[in-house]
Structure formats: C-alpha cells, structure tokens
Image (cartoon, rainbow, N blue to C red; front, side, top):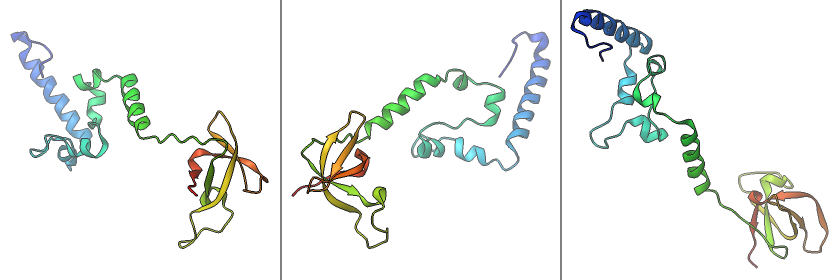
Length: 159
C-alpha cells in the first residue's frame, strides 16, 4: 500500500504505512475477532458475515481510510437490490366483493388470545374493496362491521 513511488521518499512511505497499520490495529482492538468474521472460508469461499447478513462487513478502519470497495459502493443500487429482494417475497392478496374471508383473531382482538384458541374467526363477507388494499366486511347476515381491514389480516374462506 504505497502512497508514493519515488525512490527518494521510500522510507517516508514505509513509515507512513506503518503508522496507518498501527492506527488500524489500535481501532480494531486486541481480540482480533474481526479477522474471523471477515476472512473467506475455504469450504464456501465466503465470509461468515456475508453468509448471515448477505453483504460484506465494513470494518471501522475502512471508513477512516477508504478502500476501493467502500469507494465503489453505490447506495442507490443497494436500495434497489434490497427492494427487489423484499418485493419478490410479498404475497399480494386481492379479494372480490362477493368473497368470504376469515379475519385474523390477533388483529381483531374479539376473543382473548391463548395457546389453544382459534387463530381465525369468521366467515365474513367482503362488502367493498378499497383501492388502498383495505376491505369493508360484513357478517353473513349483511350487518356491516364498523372499521376496514387490511388484506394481511384476512384469509380466503373456502366453503
């Protein structure tokens, strides 16, 4: 990691490099646990940190003395990748206005929750589907329930 290539200042470069390395080691601490988490393992070719969190670890010294990896990091691209990963697993549920649904007991809190209590209650009929993903429900006798319910706390009922 030479900062300058001229032979006359070679000793200055070495002294500076030793100071930088000493500063990095002082910031990282004496326990050296960072090396275990940030070194690629032979079996997988990846670091334990990247296997758990899906990204490489940035040690505190890299923030003060930037490396190529830190300089090349693009925050906008990272946000898009995270959004794409998240949206791939989102389950979009839509109900029609004649569907029968079950309501999550935890969301409604109509019945006291317990280990052996039923998780879903109903069936309810969908009266109106709102554009924001919420639904107005009614009991089967067409008596309207006061509030609206999000699709995440509803499940289709198959009679």
